[in-house]
Image 1 (cartoon, rainbow, N blue to C red):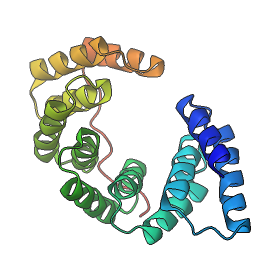
Image 2 (image 1 turned 90 degrees about the vertical axis):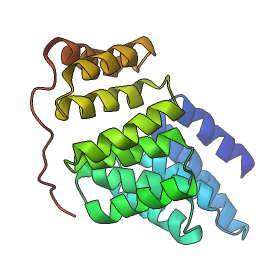
Image 3 (image 1 turned 90 degrees about the horizontal axis):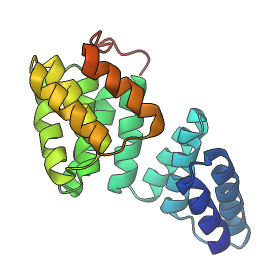
Length: 201
């Protein structure tokens, strides 16, 4: 099983998510066939790979199952809660899960970023700024967190600070597909506020 898990991890790190799913499928299948107890981390890893490869329904099942196996796992609480909020589903439950994750790991800048972004998606820009400033203190050189803080500043009317954060986000080497959107924001700001009416959930 270890070999399949390692293969899945390598593929996931290379962002070959669909292939990673297959490797994790094999690992979970083999573990079950030899009667090994289910491991939350395997379902979490496969859930992440499924979500990243656009297979949300299966991903949601895996993340929920990981949480059943390990109810207070901050990584799972954070990923599932964040995914729901980003999709505009189960907003209140998603927020509670991320708050729980932050309570369990208050010094994890990525989880604090999720909490800030959750507030942002729900239209609470003051709450977003408060959490995202904390996240940037914890992980100063993460392009995504700086970008998120820029968005929150902009929506709070702090335009020059927003541009400063977006500038920083670009300096810290964002993913290829994130560069153009940040450059556009630097030129003309955020065009429209994000949708505040959640769908589904």
